[in-house]
Image 1 (cartoon, one colour):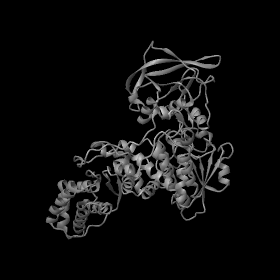
Image 2: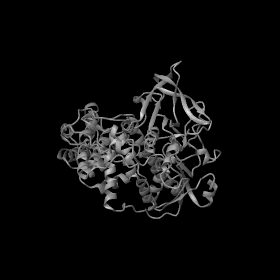
Image 3: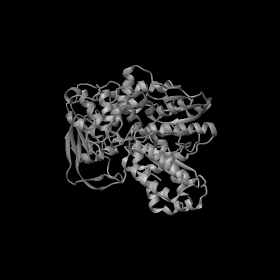
Image 4: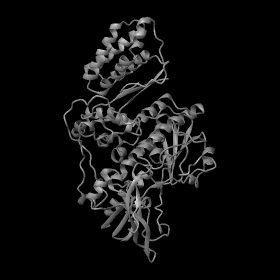
Length: 604
């Protein structure tokens, strides 16, 4: 039973009792900011309580229907607008069940149900942040309360507020009126306000537990796991091969998008919860799984990401030519303050965010002719649209429908790249049209350096013995989809090393969920999905959802766009390109939120 009706899979479920339970949940979620919902939902709930107690009358059904239509029509937000709908469907298509309950004049036994509150933006967010909740607090000027809501699910609000790929915004229901809410900018605003205030985040570890957990990798997944374990009172130790926290977020995202001080500061907050980070430790070389078990760690979380570069399958890419470097290595060395390759004309191959980061970093390093080659068109590019637009503003040259064939070298150094023209054929498994080579269209681009940035791969087999854990053909770790547990019960995993390259927020969600099931394992010796986990999956399968009726009336407004440094200024260095917004701007933007909460319930 949900925001737009109901599915009946089992006729043994008492629909009258389930309607009562659904409206009880609606009453709990009603915010009370408008009278139709606050009073109407309460009255509907009282009628259903009476029916289930054996005290109903036929006239109650007419009153229930009238109230449902009024609440749905007059309420300001989706709790009031959508929760009456399954009741109306029941009264239309299953009215006889209500009449039979009235005629029986006997109490109805209460069933077992699981309910979940969601919204289009919450559903789209991999970590299911309560977005309308924290947006509402920002509207009221309570950035501290907004941060508290964000930190229930996300331990890196300032990081995510800068680099998240914003699936929530692309699924914002406000788009049906004008433009979606600037959710990422609002999240960053809350984090920036805390920094400006000089306050420490109000983080308190849970009651201390005896068991301790080892975490491999201080990337987003590992930090999130440590954070949520700390809130539960568990001490953890992170073993990190780099010399700073953040994993690929630290050495793969340039400072002009994510200043290192933001990432380091939020990692320090994870340490405040009882986590120790040991840097420069290569698990699998410096320390093994057996060593960790002997040191008394009751569980291990693996969050090693996808730090290696994918191959182009291009002749000459493995020849070791000077001035040929993968995008992953290029960005890592740029993060260390180097200019890793020399020259003026650079070719970047790829269409994702890593390719954009390489191209834009190259400009800031002094390359005067930066070219990006992509085998499809701009419409198929997986990179963030903002990244593409800003790269073009900065003067990067885009070459579409071009694929590399052969690296050309002279005296052991890159001199050019033989390419081939492409055209788009039928869609492939990703849904994008497949690039097809045009015979006889080969040509050569002369250049000083080449940086392929076409994807990343996992290196789990370098960390964990393949004979102890199940590793897929993609070199990812096989885990239970919900519990994140491997075939070794004490080993859990999450993030890119399980899914392959995915958004940073998805890694945070994986670490958060793993912490919950690690606690189960340490407490009970096993990890078992809960009813809410299955409910979450059911809602996810329903996808983006909108109510049947037209959108409520609202004045057309423009989406907040944070200030961005001028292209001719920003390419001079690695200073942060995008700025923050003022409290007044944030409050005005937050007020655009339609509070699209809705309730889903399933019988158990």
